[in-house]
Amino acid sequence: MNCLAIQGSFPIFTLVESKWKNMNIVERFLRYVSFDTQSDENSGVTPSTPKQMVFAQYLKNELEDLGLEEIELDEHGYLYATLPANTDKEVPTIGFIAHMDTSPDLTGFGVTPRIVYKYDGKDIVLCEEENIVMSTSQFPELLDHQGEDLIVTNGKTLLGADDKAGIAEIVTAIVYLQQHPEIKHGKIRVGFNPDEEIGMGAHKFDVEKFGCEWAYTMDGSEVGELEFENFNAAAAKVIVKGRNVHPGYAKNKMVNAIRVANEFMCLIPGNETPEATEGYEGFYHVVGVEGEVEQAIITYIIRDHDRTKFEARKECMLAWGEIINAKYGAGTVTVELKDQYYNMRQQIEPVMHIIDIAFKAMEEVGVIPKVKAIRGGTDGAQLSFKGLPCPNIFAGGLNFHGRYEFVPIQSMEKAMNVVVKIAELTAR
Image (tube, rainbow, N blue to C red; front, top):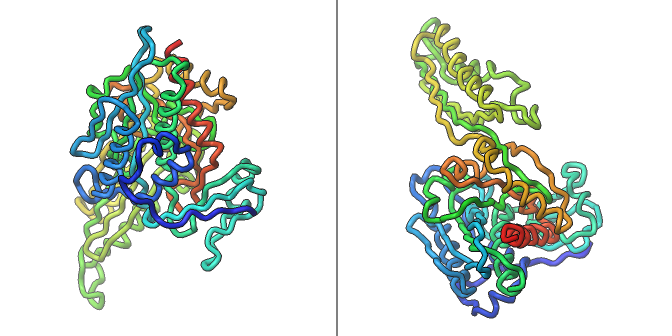
């Protein structure tokens, strides 16, 4: 298997304009993933980590040297820029958006990618010393990319294709349009935001300042994905109050919050969890448990594409709490619910031409469109409800958020071509 290791980190703010303009999509992506940009859901500030601002400043410098206009990096780490129109026709202003942060699930520090050229369909050893192997039996999607060039991790970090592949595709597409003035396009806005991975990416995105009729997030996975449906999403915190008594004298007195929490968890239907569902099926997902005899806390996320079923799921959580309270006394269990985002479909359906344009763009660059519902959410869902219709397009990466993340170079190139073609078709 022909492999090339990319070692070390890249210097910041040392490139000259000609280098940025001549950089290909792979060079750009490898430079981007050298920045550690993990977000932190517990920080309470935006951006949630200062290292995201370091990367944002780097991107700002790059966009300035590329000659973009109306460049602004605000105090919250949101970066906006404009590629001016090159036609006198009246063309809608459109945007392309990607997020700068990487998942808190696995470290993004010291990412050292490796390129597997002309992948031969065999298992890929990511870290020989720790016997970390990406096997085709566990990850059969590898076999869809035989003969392609795969960028993989060293087995110890995530890669960051989610969503630095999207950023690389957008910036490279902008450079391509600059270098090919024969491709006519309207005003194009780009937006790069922090904290998508902790559900806060769109919260301080200034839709009015962005000034687009519609936009696309480049944050999908496999080639061809075109998504304008996503989960309705809520978070649930289940707080269980116990009563601690010396265990030798606890009969009929102790209420062990840990055991009560377990009873609550057992009320969740076993066939309505992420590992038992697919397609349009919703779920309850326990993401954290902590506790002692006096108190236990269970955290869940609740997901469903159907709004009615979504609301029913939240009601079930409250009802299960009451079942426990009926057994152990009022106030034993408190269920706190917080909606996170909603299905963007209802915002996209009135403007379906934006899906038609993306669909046609894929077809014209040789990509088979795969319209599907997202089993998750994107910044585009929240932006759509803020008045910016914003479906999601593939960025090409797979196995996000972990050490087995990879991205085929050819997939990134196809995504870049789709961005260019959308700009061209919108101007037509």
